[in-house]
Every structure is written in structure tokens, then in C-alpha cells.
Image (cartoon, rainbow, N blue to C red):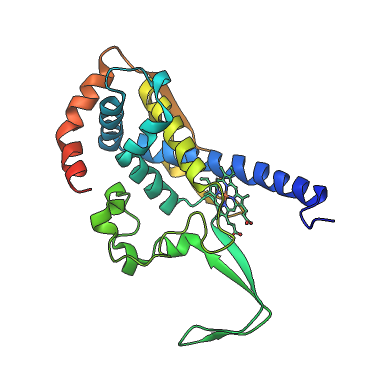
Length: 233
Ligand code: HEM
């Protein structure tokens, strides 16, 4: 029989369904939390969205528009840096690996702590500061290729990463277009270390519908800082 039999297909489908929904949902929760705490970032996201929509409503956002939400992508990445949905993952080392100053013996289980790697001061400088523009090409240059690994790395990395970023962009665009959020209790946004990085008490935000003209006012506020972001790309 072909090695990819129906039992394996079923197992892989279940894996994809399981890892897809929880990781994407918690990523969105942390993202809304971070944006709601920072009105200047919210305004820039809105300015970019209004520019991309160019008079259309958010319901008319097309797949091809998503690649132009560049600032929004930086915000999503910065949120994934501080709150990686998968905070730690493991590998089994079959053959000895020489890491220079130390060796990992054969038959060892190794854990990769994404949450710690994402806050290494030598890679990120002021690692606890939420700064989406770390992800501009200019500021990313020279950074270690494995300093940012929310989707893991190597041959068993996340097969859904492009899809996940597009989902986050679409949902954030929809939410930012329609609502303004405020975090009810920032001190209760605490990591719950588990296989997926949930907020221990959930993320409680208070949302209200956008007022007439609010989107345009917000977009105008951030037009100039958005164009200096665009010129750094
Ligand atoms: C923000 C959202 C997501 C994050 C942060 C994320 C993160 C990850 C990470 C870190 C791994 C590797 C785990 C390991 O090495 O042990 C992984 C694996 C995987 N992810 Fe995602 N993921 C996300 C969304 C998705 C989506 C939307 C899908 C499917 C549509 C998906 C499908 C998978 C699958 C099938 C694997 C296993 C790959 C393999 O073992 O070869 N993920 N994901």
C-alpha cells in the first residue's frame, strides 16, 4: 500500500484542523490587545487600510490587496514576536550535533523556547518594547535568520504560515474598519504557558462601532508617519 494511506491522511487532516484554529485565534487575541493599547498604531493601520481600499468598503478587500498591507504585517509580526502562539516546540536529535562550544548527544530531546529567543536583547534591543518597525527590511538586515521563529523553522515548520498571516490581516482590517477597542484590564493580560500561548484570563476589550467620519480623521492623523514608513521599505 502507498505509505500515505487513509489513516495517515485522516491523522494529517486532524492535525491541520487542530493546529490551525487555536494558534490563529490566540494570535488574533494578542494582536487586538496590543493594538488597542496603542492608538498611534491603530491610526497607522487605519491609514494604510484606507489607502489600500481607495474608496471601497472593507467588504470589498481583495486577496491581492493583502500584500499591500505592509505596515499591518509588521504589527502582526511584532505581536507574534512578543506572544508566539506556539511558545516552545521540541525536536528529537538522532545523531550527535556539534554546536561549536557544546555538543548535543544522539538520542536527546531538545526544546526550542520561542518566547525566550524572541526577546534576546542582542537580536532585538529593548525586546519588551512593542515596535512594529523592527520588521522593515532596513532594520531586519543583519538579524539572525532564526531570531524570529513563530512558525518554527526547518523541514517541519508551519505549512499554514502564509495563510495564517493573510487570515490575521483580513480579520484585523475588518475589526479596525468597524470598531475601536479599549483594553478593559491590561494587567490581566498574562501568558498562560502551555502548548499554545493562551491569555490566562482571556483578553477583555470593550469595543464600540466607529463614529461617522472617524476612519478618515484617524487616517489623516497618520498619513505623514505612514509615508515615512513606506519610504523605509
Ligand atoms: C498564527 C498562526 C500559526 C502559528 C503561530 C503556527 C505555528 C506553528 C508552529 C510553531 C509549528 C511547528 C511546531 C513544531 O515544530 O513542532 C506549526 C506546525 C504546523 N502548522 Fe502552524 N501555525 C499557525 C497557523 C497554522 C494554520 C492556519 C495552519 C493550516 C492551515 C497550520 C498548519 C500547521 C501544520 C499542519 C503543522 C505541522 C507541520 C509538520 O509537522 O510538518 N498552522 N505551526
